[in-house]
Image 1 (tube, helix red, strand yellow):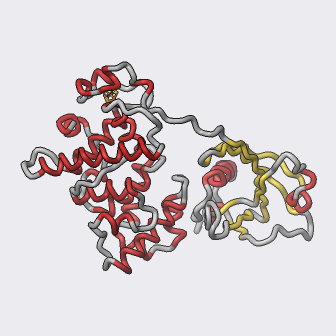
Image 2 (cartoon, rainbow, N blue to C red; image 1 turned 120 degrees about the vertical axis):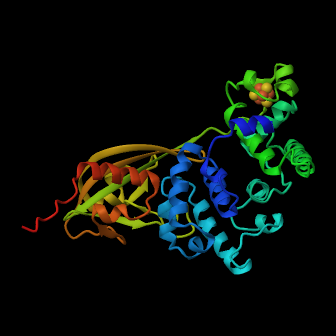
Image 3 (cartoon, helix red, strand yellow; image 1 turned 90 degrees about the horizontal axis):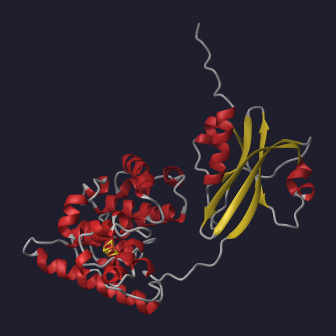
Length: 353
Ligand code: SF4
């Protein structure tokens, strides 16, 4: 595994450093998100917020703007909370103790294990989706890996492996960092969910699933509940080249992100009855956006509308397109904004002659 990793590991920027801050940011961004998506986000983040201090002191809107498009915005808010905790309780130095890392907001056992092993070479285990798949197949472990008993077995196995690496570390034959990263990398590149590349696998001779013809059967993950469809309508209201937007309140999903006025349309809401059509008129469809958050499959239909005379839409700001572009938007609403920006050319600069 370690020989394979040294020859095949992808050249990723967060692998060029032992800075726990840089590794932490990469691990949080990589949750639910592919490496190629994360790369430009990580580069931009590290350029703008290169250290714990800069993250702790940044404006919340700056943090959200740097995260815009990655989704699951609680991750970004927790990063900043954790940075403030490190400033207040650890003198601004990222803690090395596993329990102290685990106590930081937004850091669970996997992330704490990844940071402590990769940044500090500690024998801390990891278990994410990739590692789960690799271990269940190599060791032929049956049962749903998310069920407590099987999950415990897998954590124990991961711990046993990284402890062996720690013992061999003394003879420079292994490292906890390389062992854990090799498990992750094998799951990402070779032992993939569908069509794993077993003939290229460095541990094929030891793999129980391959030997027993169970590769496609493991891991035995129970089927998830079917996705729920939801339907929203958003209104793009313009006044003299400015558009009405509002900021989502605290303590709800996508808190503090900006959006166009919108409502959820359930089957009993008729368009002619809703709040917007009493206030707006001449609504014309602009675009329809489909996106997913956790188990929800959302459709957002955007309409362009004019305000009826003497009607108000409630709290919000009227902003130009360049001003809107400075704000962090919920990703579906960002797509509406991109659509608008493509249709409305930027204002021409006045010639000084
Ligand atoms: Fe995965 Fe195949 Fe390697 Fe087994 S032999 S660990 S199933 S890639």
